Every structure is written in C-alpha cells, then in structure tokens.
Amino acid sequence: MGVDTQDWEQAQARIAQLEAELAQLQAQTKKFRSDAEKYYHLYQYSSDSIFIIEVSTGAIIDANPDAARRLGYPLEELIGLPLSQIEIQDDSWQAQSTSSWRSAISGTHVYECRYRAKDGSLIPVEVSSRLITIEGRDLIQNTVRNISRRKRLEERLRIFERAVEQSANTIVITDTRGNIEYVNPKFVHLTGYSREEAYGQNPRILKSGQTDPAVHRELWQSLVEGKEWVGEFINMKKNGELYWEQAVISPIRNATGIVTHYLAVKEDITARKMAEAERERLIEELDAFSHTVAHDLKNPLAVLMGFTEMLLDELSQLSQEEIHEMLLKLHQTEHKLNNIINELLLLARVRELAEVTIEPLDMPSIVAEALKRLQDLVESSSAQIVLQDEGTWQIAVGHASWVEEVWANYISNAIKYGGTPPQITIGSTPEEDGSIRFWVRDNGPGIASEDIPDLFQRFSRLEMIQAEGHGLGLSIVQRIVSRLKGKVSVQSAPGEGSIFSFTLPAYQ
Image 1 (tube, helix red, strand yellow):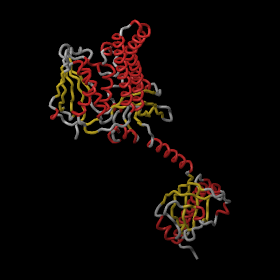
Image 2 (cartoon, rainbow, N blue to C red):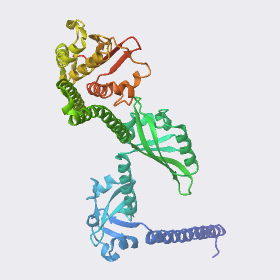
Image 3 (spheres, one colour):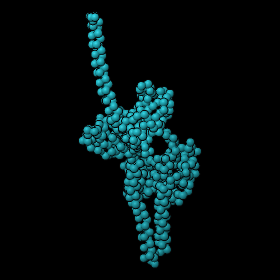
Image 4 (cartoon, one colour):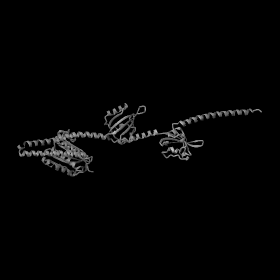
C-alpha cells in the first residue's frame, strides 16, 4: 500500500515545526539555565543580605551566605527562624500575618530597622522588601543592607550641625565670590538680619565704614592665596548699632583641593573691647587723678609745713598778733585740705555706688542747703546772689545729696572767680528734649574758648585751671551728672562772665 504524497509532506512539515520548536525550547532552556546561574551567583555572592520569608508563617525559608555571615549564624541554623526573632522594628510597620504583608507591600517597601545578630548585638539596616510568588507560594524577599557606617556618618553630621547651630560664635559660609550661603542662629541674633535676608548677600552688608580698608584688602589677599585669615572688624547691625568682631576666615576645599567656599567663625568681642577701652581710660584717669591729688594737696601741705616750721623756729620772737594770724592761716589751710579729702571721698562714692536712689527733687531747698554751706564765703566776698523765680522751676529727678554737691561747686566757683563783688544769678530752664537745665551765671572775667572743651574732662591737667581749683571739683560734677543721666556744659567768653549748667531728667 503506497504512502499518500500529501500526507507525507504534511508529516515532514510537522517534523520541521517540531524541530524548530525543540530548538527554541532548548535555547530558552539554555538561557533560563544561564539566567538562573547568574541570579544564583548574584544571590549567593551579593554584598547585601537576602532573606526569603514564608508569608503564611513569617519564617525564613532561605538566605544567602552574606545574611548568615553578618548575623553570625550557620546557614542551616538561620533557616526556619521566625523573622521577628531577628528583625527589630523601630517604627509602627509590622508584618505579622499574610494580610498585613500583602497590604504593607505593594511594589517595594523600603524601611530602616535593626537586625539582631546571634551574639545579641543590634545592626542598623535598610530593608528593601517586596512580595514575590513562586510556584503559587506567597513569599517575601528582604534585601538587607548594613548601614552602620552611614548611621555613624549621619550622627557625626548631626553633631556637627548641632555644634554649628548652637555655637556661641557667628558662623557664615560663602561661595568664592563672597555670597552668603549659610548663617547660623547666632548670626541672626547678633546682627538682626534673618537668614532669608542674609542668603545671597555679601558680608559687606555688615560694613560700618569704620574698619580700616587695609584690613579688607589683607583679608581677600590671604583668601585668594588659599590662606587662613585672622583679624577684627567694627561691623554694623541691621539697626545701625556698631559692634566688634574677631574673625577667623578659612578656605574650604573639595576632594581635589579646589577652594569652593569660605568659612567665617566670628566672635562678638564688643564687651571685651569696651572693657579694654575702660581699662585704658581708667589707667589714664588714675594717672591724671594722682597728678590732681598731688597738685591740690601739695600747696596746702607746703603752707602747713612752712607755718609750722616758722612757729617752731621763731615762736619766741613772734608777737601774739603774728601767732594768731599764722594759726588762722593754718586753720584755713586745714579746712582746705579737709575739703579736698571730702571731694575725693565723694568722687570715690559716686564711682563705686552701683545703685543710685533716683527721686523727685525739691530743687529750691537743695539750693538753699548749698548756700547755707557757703554762707561764710558769701559774706566774706560780699557776693550778690539772685534766684530766678523759684515758683516756675519744673521738678527734676536725681539724687539729692549729689545734686547739692553740684550746686555747691558751681556757686563756690562763681563766687571765687566772679567779679568784685561777685554778682551771681541762679535759674532753671526747660529743654526741648524733656530735661531741665539748671544754671549759675557769674560776672567774672570768663574763660578762653580753647580751654572750654577740656574744662570738664576728668582730672584736667590744664595748669591754669588746676591752680584755680576747677580741676577736681568739675571732675566730680561731671561724674555726678553723668551718673544721673544728665549733661554738663559752660558758656563763656573772655570779659563776658560764665554760665555753668547741668541738666537732669524731668519728673514724669
């Protein structure tokens, strides 16, 4: 029986088709084996730990060698452990049932937690978890990366950030053109500029114009050369207030050594500068004080010594009238010395007293007390003293005993250096700034204009003025009125007399 040609051809075509399908299947099998081998190697030799977890039980059914090595378990001991035994959740994300796994993981879920090693140590990790299905089984694949080093770096960065943010010094970071990219809270607190106002600006917004331009040239020359610069600025806050800063400005380099930014760490040294200035002022004042004391005490002491020696050497040859005259001069000199000592003690009290009682002043009564103290001087000089209508005087505030000393000084000077006889007017004038000016006008020869600016300087060394007794007294007046938040002044010209005045705050 013969074979049908058509059937034979169909059979041949079918065989060719099957051979092609077999070849394709063999190629796919080969690729599958290659892929399987590749992924197996990736799984086996991955630098990350990989865990396969059974969703229904939460148990580990497989893990790669890295997982076992990092946790310190033999692989066979790790298999079968519940994941909850090694995974310590630090947040609310928990996977305790199939439904929670499915609801928690849609796609890939990344979270941080800690894994407990066999020895009990905890390892910070980042977990990339996803749901997979193999042969109908729901599984979880956790790819776990040790982030201990990253955590240490993050903690170091947090420490650095806290140190910078909480620093008592101003910290500014600029780009190489000097544009501000960062300022810390101390900058904001000190300068009054917010971060938003500072960012993008140049530190020249703080320039006061009082720092020597050579300082800025030296600064930029150092930075251009890649050097650190240390120096001081007189800067200006947003409100216009001046302050001193000591700055250390350094270049910041990247990994290749190229300068990318500048870092300025600046300390507010205003208080220190003020203390230094006060120290220098005190030294100068002490020098002048010693000069004043020596000058004012030397003459009376010389008189005392002269008359005492004369009495000792020539007492038997002197008449009663001469002896009485000498004793009178000795008494007057003693009185002058006593006044100088009292002035020095008053000056010390004004300087040292931390708190001063400020109260409304009955100024006419205070003036009356000062005049009572000077009664002998008024009578001996035949001084004519006129008080402006006291009923119109406004009430000022101050410290009564100190203000009495001011009046006593002004009035005694007006009597001593007034005309012959002295004609003195005492009055009060309200000022536009809310203070009250009290003044004493005399008819003396006046004071040269070039001497007026130095007249109230503490312990002025003007020999002529010192010799006439103004130096220590006016120094006391200056200090008292300054402590009472007032000002002293004098108007005078040769041949036109003088008006010495002081201001005090008005009673509100």
